[in-house]
Image (tube, rainbow, N blue to C red; front, side):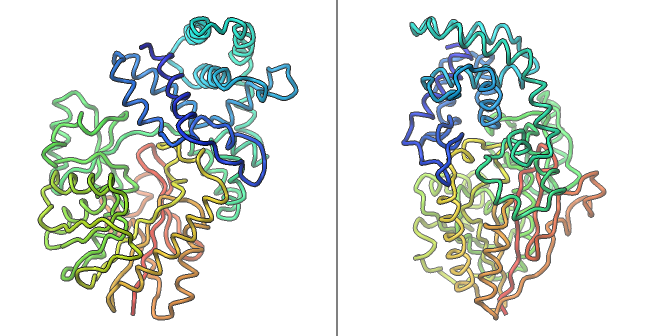
Length: 473
């Protein structure tokens, strides 16, 4: 299978993987007909289809798919300007919209792939599907995109209108009110400037093994540098875990640096003695890091999803910490801890808005109803964390969201209901390798208003995170 054909199949299969949600707020737009609305994620389909591709075609397919998903509302807005039909692309079959999305994204974002080859590949695909009647339209639209699309992109980037800036940043336009309630205009413009940064992989070495890891990576021809913010190692591109030497032995973990900083804060908050309760343990990445950093710690982890629970069990075995981890499957609102925890770590389910660049599928599956349900679930989980935490214990509330609705608002409501609790203004940058963030040439840490601390996606290795530390008196 060739790369262009594979990319089109990924878009088609993710689109058809489930029922499209109703448009948020009753409005039409990208949320209704996005390529990522299905149950399946693009990464899942790519893994399945890549078995029939050469490495080159696999890379091309992946590059095209993620280029589409990161800013698909913008690509649609651009190509619709060249459609003569006043209805825009409403009258087009879904596979023609996929072709136009893929062609527009590839022409305007992929700098190292010939535009003519891309367009010809899409036209050949239409002919092979006996859809020759659409060839003239697709060819004409993409010809105009190639000539005038970059100018339109630049106009969106420079626009003072928040809606157009959101298009350029790849932020779903319906979600703009949630962003404006969280950030003032200068900060919001800066965040939107950071959103299109292509993500890169960071590695978390086992404690004390960073120098050894850098040496091994160099021997394998992998360019890497130590991070000035943490013990992480930065790679120039992205990598699959199995491709990293030492992964199978637990010497290294592929993990975003924002996640590493959040889990490092948990490790610093653990003062020894007692048990750490990981209320939503997920795949066990943060919990495994805490156990590696705290050799005397014990961890109890709860996870509702069977798949993530099994992944967490494998992760603890891979890291060699399974003997200190008791992982249980079930609801965090119903299970009871085996012993009173002195530290409760709640990495709450969220919109993932801080990780949208790395995981673009998720933002096109979201709407206001879903966001409200997430906020309600976060409040319930934080209430549960407070109830379970032992007196004089600590709760660490974490999300990978940059939206106040999921962060400060949740913390404020729980603190107001629990006078026995107080927030501790502990910054995730305290105790990092470089000290103050200015030493690293970046400022990723931002105090919440007024609760918690944000980690901004200031570099390609950082995803956005939020952390709040609550002490139970």
